[in-house]
Length: 219
Image (tube, rainbow, N blue to C red; front, side):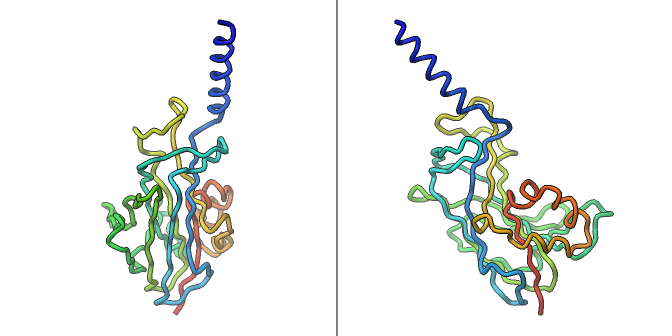
């Protein structure tokens, strides 16, 4: 009886230890943007790719969890940041400065908000225990741009996975180009304090976790 009780206590302690973290789970989603340049010419193609196993690494616990047929709610924004628009309180989404090319096998497409801004959103393709998403952007207009690729897991509810801690929320952090700087210094070239000040105050939380990448497009 004593051994059984000790075993239960040990299991409870181990569970509590695994759940001893603040905030939400942060699952790491690897992604690549190529070529990794700071300047593109009009007509160039920018390729985005994200491919990872359904055994997904989680940053808070430093463990891997099995996320089978999981919906990460991916979304891709492109902002033009060489125009100061802070007074309007809006960020200028500029997907219309690009042509998006997406293989029909991916459930990923342009979505237009009520304010007229356009993003790419949909789901990852899940096959053979792997998540995959790929698309191309062809540059059309000159300017200074920031791309962000994130996940809306934090705003969704109802999904779970084995050994999930009770009442813990779920987020996803996008690791773009293996933790490179992704031209974050170019934000200083923007006249908008949202980009040249606010984002740079907390770059990991406001840039890198959303797969930020900044670049020029020139003729």
